[in-house]
Image (cartoon, rainbow, N blue to C red; front, side, top):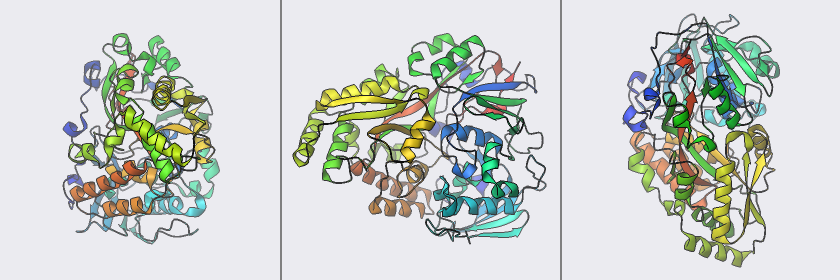
Length: 545
């Protein structure tokens, strides 16, 4: 988006060329006639156990997010190439300076329990998500709406004004060029009145308004999976061409890969690194290797001794970053399916070629053994480090190989002890992150919620943000972020966000590792398999049989 425009239809966010979403292999990510297949067939795919009950404003991890995105629909959504389209809104229009947005809803929309979706369904849900008393992980997404308070329980979003059952306005604290992108994220979906009355019960069996719904009230079987069926009442651009989606929770992607090979799983959305050498040969016509809006990082919590936000801590963070041979790891472990990172976002974002490669201070992302040793020695002169540097990871995500390689690179370069620390599941790892129980570094990453630079920055590094597990807090960074968010002109906003990234390069609350491709496979029983801008399969388009 080059400038603020009046009509949302003109808000073309990311072009196909910018995203580089041309699939390698798998017939361009397609396999068969889009009109074929059994419309009642259920598609099976992999997933992980959600960390929390399925409340949209409190679901900030991939396992739960995959389910939320199928069960709910918001005002807007994104097409395969990351461009905004109307979903449950007829229109979303800004005023001249993008401080007031007028939302008009589709007539006669309803939730899967038959209750109507109205302006109140959005206003009440957003107020619930923004209220500090409810401790929602997505609270910070509402920060620019007038009336928001980060710490005042019961604070109301006074910027939300109902005009009728199908129209409301949103008044912002400052102009926001990317607001139309922001409301495409699942934190902004509507919720029923009953959901807000008993969120605990609702979270186990959510009632939504999306292309799918739970097969039954007890469809979510913890540690096993969840069964969804087509929502026949859904009206929008994501209408399902199949009968449902069953998400099976796996503790190992290797097992999921074997299940695709044997026909017990239709789609695997990310191949385990151990299969990178063979997956194209195993699935010559049904695989994908394409750029995705994902960056992988290593978080070093700021509460760790020797790694705080002081002189010693910053020296050690820079040394760790420069001790990592990213080129070797991405070549040997990932077989070229990853690219060493130069910033904290993704090359798939529009304009990245202009700002993403030239972030101030990004020389710390380059392997430099001599400089790394020098920095570590300076830190030791302040306070001697004699511990073991650990990198925690989840066993159910295919991370063991690269974590081992990274630990070996750090150990060899800095002449210290370094090793991986395995957690059985992603949910268990996240629990310790949230409770500040980490005793070392840990693998981390970000899959974009919406295609904008700010979405890679605010949720992870803004003071108090829900996914800020480094517990990083910098007034300088927060102010730079606010300056970018307040720009109505998208190009100027991008420049300011890039300046904010320069502050991160200096502090390194997380160490950028590499940009990730999506490498998925599927069996020959399903057709029309495509992966979107954010690496997620477009399940509603898949056919079977």
